[in-house]
Image 1 (cartoon, one colour):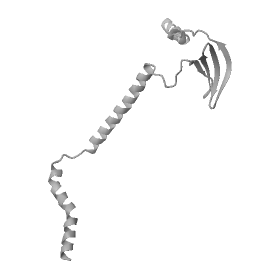
Image 2 (image 1 turned 90 degrees about the horizontal axis):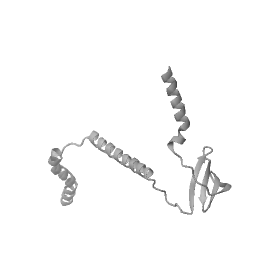
Image 3 (image 1 turned 30 degrees about the vertical axis):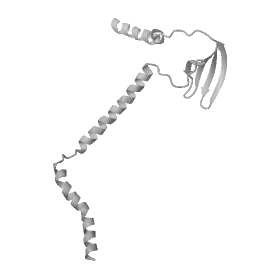
Image 4 (image 1 turned 60 degrees about the horizontal axis):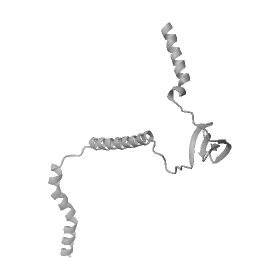
Length: 143
C-alpha cells in the first residue's frame, strides 16, 4: 500500500517538478507585451488589406478580364435605366442586339446592324461641365 502511495505521489508531482525546473528559464525570458503583439497584428492586417487593394487596382488598371469572355459575343455598351435595370448593346457576329437586363430576366429589345463606335474622349464627356466652369471663372474675373 505504501509503495502504491509513493508511486502515485511521484507521478502526481512530476508536473510540479517540471514547472520548478523550468522556472529559472521563464524568469530569464523577456516579458511579452500585449500592446506590442496587438500592434504587430494590426500592422499585418493593414499590410494584407493594402496588398488586396493594390492587386485590385493593378487588375483594373491593366484591364484584366473576368473569365468566360468570348470572341463571338462582346458587350459594346451599357446604360443604367433604374436601380437594378440596364440596357445593354451586345455584338453578335455582324449585328448588335439591344437587350434589357433586370434581376431575373433578359429581354431582347431590338436588333441593329453592326455600327462603328464613336470615339469617346475626355473633352467630349466633360464638355458641358468644362464650359460651365469656364463661364463661372470668367464671371469671377470680370467683377
